Image (cartoon, rainbow, N blue to C red):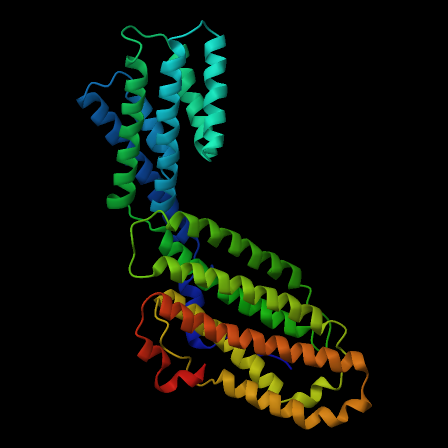
Length: 386
């Protein structure tokens, strides 16, 4: 069972669009464009903070610019998360700093304020805000300024709030960069890499294991971690349509379960280079494997286009499974001629291939239902094709 390495035109086009083939270099590469975009976003944010701070006569307006730079992230969702953590930390730090400054003397009241703020943040599951609370307490209690005691904490909250508002406005309206778009394309990339991992695993069936397998395994894990981080950021963004949170979460879960089956398949194909029992399952076994590879690419395209009711053209995974099961029945009587280990490996391999095929089909159908696509479209007519 060997899979052809050549991509179809549509698969190659999808890979290029999802930046799987990084052939573009120089100043117009994707990474360079993102770098220029981030530079412009930060420059605009600090400029606006400085201008507004001078307009409303904030005494230390540069703290607004500092806050804007700190909370600005690569996408809206991550910016919202960082803004929330910084605002909560600033409010708690201002409250603790002002309260403890009314009692005792430095440095004991300062030390007690920082310890109490960190403890309360931890108890409230606000650990990301605890460091910012400590920074605000330090400024409020150690920076001496003329005026009432409440003047410094109030000014600090106003300056930080200014930076956060400007950062959110720039990130949302001027340079909108949605985490849900990145996680959608990241999940499409994940399924393409899962396809490559699947092909590489099958190279070990009836032959030596590929030297590229460990690197591909790490690539899959890296993309899963990155997508999980983006998914967390995307949950803090305004709604992007019906069911998109459920759809993205479901795709991430299906990706993890398919990867687990691929790891089991990898264990099954080991030591199979001399197996003859599994060769009796051809061409049905090879046909299922080829259609699974096509299914991976079709799911990636569905994710990228965010349309799941379209079945993959030219393949029928359920029919492939039925044909393979019929072939298994037809060769079962030859089992006495082969070792038990060889037969068990063949059964394990075909079982894992059927699991992958059915999970790919479920990925498309269940995600389509989650995002509210018409069930009649998803289940009608040519649905048996996947």
